[in-house]
Structures are given as C-alpha cells and as structure tokens.
Image 1 (cartoon, rainbow, N blue to C red):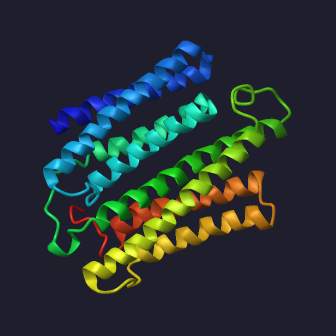
Image 2: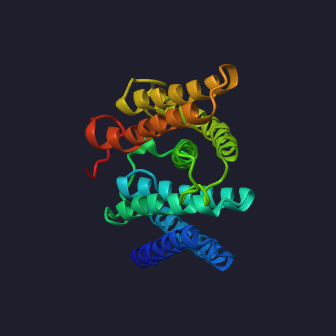
Length: 273
C-alpha cells in the first residue's frame, strides 16, 4: 500500500510541476487554481505515506535516507503552499516544484523497509529533534529559491530590458522581505533542532555534544544563518548580498543533510548506504 501511495504522490508532484511551468508561461488563473489543487492533493497523499510508515515502524520515520528525503520533500511542499496562499506568489512555484520533485524522486528510488531502532534511540526526542530540524531546513530551502529568483530579477533589471522573467517575477523589495520572513522562521526552528538533538544525545549516549560530523556541520549551518540575520539586523544586509549568502547557506544545509550522512562516518550515517 505504501508503494502505491508513493507512486500516486509522485504522479501528482509531476503533474503539479508541469502546471506551475505552464503558469509561468501564461499566468492563467485557472492554471493557478489547478496548481494549488494538485499540490494540496499531493501533500495529502504524501502525508498518508508518512503516517503509514510511522504506524508500521512504530517511530517517527526519519531514520533512513528514504524517510529523510520524503519528510524533507513533504515539508518543502507544505511550506511553499502556505507561502503561496499567504503571499500570492504562484510564479515561485515554477522554481520550488521542480526542486521538490527532485527530492521526492530521490526518496522514491531509495525505498526500503523500515528498520527497528536501537533501544538507546527509542525516545520522543527523535520526533521533536527531527521535526524541528527538517522544518528549519525546509524553510532554508524556500529561502534559497526566493534568493535565486531575486538574483534572476535583479539581473533583468540591470540589463534594462523587459525580458521573460522581469514581467513575471515579483518586485525585488517583495522578494527581499519574503526572504527575511522565511529566515526568521527557519533559524529558530534549526536552533530548537540543535538543542533537542543535544538533549537526545545526552539521553542516548550520555553526552550533549561529541563533535560528530553531523553536529559539527549543523553548528556551521547555524552560524552561517545566524550571521545572515545578524548582518541584516545590524549591518543592513539586504538585496543581492543577503540573497547570495542565503545561497551559500543552502549549500551548507545540503551538505549537512546529505553530504555528511553519505560521505562522513559518524553517528548519523545512514546504515542503508
């Protein structure tokens, strides 16, 4: 059943991506409605796969490559839908949807049966730590997309031409303000994720911090985004500079999320790899 739900979810995400790409071309309100409808349906189906796996495994499904990618994809999709409904920025979906589809495809092709957790890791801290960490990383992914869109729009303006993107993308000030709002959500969530991870580590292994590669890179990512927010609040970092730093921050997020787990041996290494 889980595989069938994943397949149906993949079809809906692909359908959603296609519609967002059509929307950026024609900006039709009916297409926009179909984008939102198919994205919402994909989120509902995707959520059902998470719940199914949660029930089957008996713990929050974020302990393998497949599960982590799936949770990450779901939170990106849900986070973007909230942004679109609140700020009416459907054109951003043409950038978010393809990226999210890539993450879900990676989850789809790394499917595996759930595995039991070691006794030391059976704790409610898993749910709190994983959920807040992934929520923060999903927010930073949306910040990355908004930053890329900002750079594209700025480039069009500097060329002083009414090109394809100029007439379709939001104004620079709206993109910059949106980016800041996303950062103010993502940074506290990542902070909570790191703190709860330390508490869970002490519960499981008797030490709050062991400089595991995942812990180290999580701290680096936290410092990067903390620096971005500090720069915005005290040094007036806005616009292009802030967008470029957010792109660098996203590279740290990706290495923390995937690079560390797949390349560096440690307590967070995915056993399936």
